[in-house]
Length: 301
Length: 315
Image 1 (cartoon, one colour):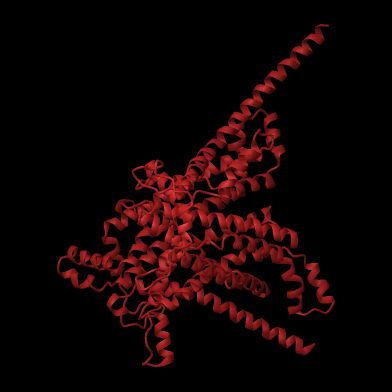
Image 2 (cartoon, chains in turn brown, red; image 1 turned 60 degrees about the vertical axis):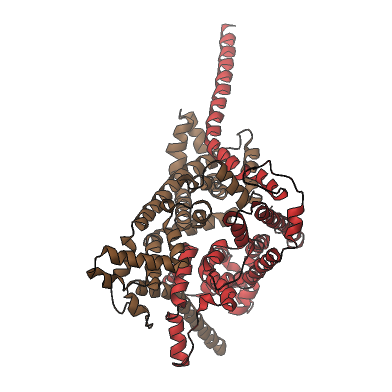
């Protein structure tokens, strides 16, 4: 018995050590990138940067922000996220509510109609050809419209409404003389806020992080998103060199030496920080809702 | 008589109102559904006829009036080394992910469940979920930073191996491409994918553990005989979903990691490169079509067998 006890205690400590290692593996890469983003670029090239900047500077960030297209990309990304989230929630919530009403004639058929594309769809190229035809290529709405009606989200909202809001609430409201619109906005909407917050965050994070839509359907510089800019920065080191030179010119002579302190590597690090910082800031709020959502999904299945 | 009359009139009146009200009610619900139906019709159903392009010799200027060539594209596909190689690569990555990235969250959830301190446990969870919220390209950017010639990984190798150690360009090495894919995927997904297993473990009746411990089962035995069987249904469902996806690959990660020193294509990257980048629409559509079809058949098959053997199924 005693031996068993010692063994289990020993095992407990090993487990704790493993978890600490896990924390380090998850956190340290981000700290390393942050340190590089805040460190003098030429100094970084000597190596030895760990988790804090050796020569603190904000040059990397100022080179990035010197680029007007970067600022534009930031605002475009923000606009996209806001628009997609608001419109997406309106579309998905209203559809989900209508589908909870089993007395609705054709309810099952509509559900099937919305579900089929989850298993079978046209694929990338037919979608691309369609977008060419309707001029969604190089159009801001290509970021918004295709993702508005996501069946999985409708399913999650629908199962939440039917599981947690009894139908009798609606019925009693009807008796009290409330019409459909009032039931929807005064009763169902406030009661489904938890699931709507979850789905809204899914949509927002998904849209903020997406860059392949830009790669596929957008070629015009003024429609690039922040994530796509990061991809370009990673893929094209010449572009980075150009960025650094431009910054040097715009700073007239005296600033040139300063700007040369930025290197492709330090710029990529700074850009990673810029694109991830909004997520990191709202992360504590996100986490709670995201987990709620995934457990809702689990209950469903 | 008068009373009867008025009652009948009232009933008729009520019926009329009810019928009208019902209609009105449904009209409102249909209006609510309209945006979803139209969007799905347009963005999911309208592209479907486009699959016919894979049976054509598609010409951008002729559009759907391009000549029909039947199954020639698909036949040609199976003689193309590029397609066969990409298919092999896709399956190879999927198999590795099934072997490594699939069981890892299960193990992580079981281990995390053994941690006593609630605060510490929650902290581990918070930190391990973080990568899930970063975009793939941000993760790749971070990889560039830590793997760079004078990045922390090379610094560590030099400090262990001495000054003479060669600094490796991890991301420009063909042999390291697949391990990099697997590691990055594992890093980004292990924490988040454990959430569903943690929820499943939390749902296990504690009486089962008590009974097991009265029967003299130690921690390990309890884990093997209670925890694992109880989270099995969840694992099987996720496994089915994963099997259905083995012909799909993570475009964001693979395309993002590719660079001039790497020659590694998967199905999604050749669809993009052949189709959108090179304008070879017929071929790219055919590739996508074959991929989708096989994937669909796989899901149905695996679901069927799982139903027979385990009585666990998606539908």
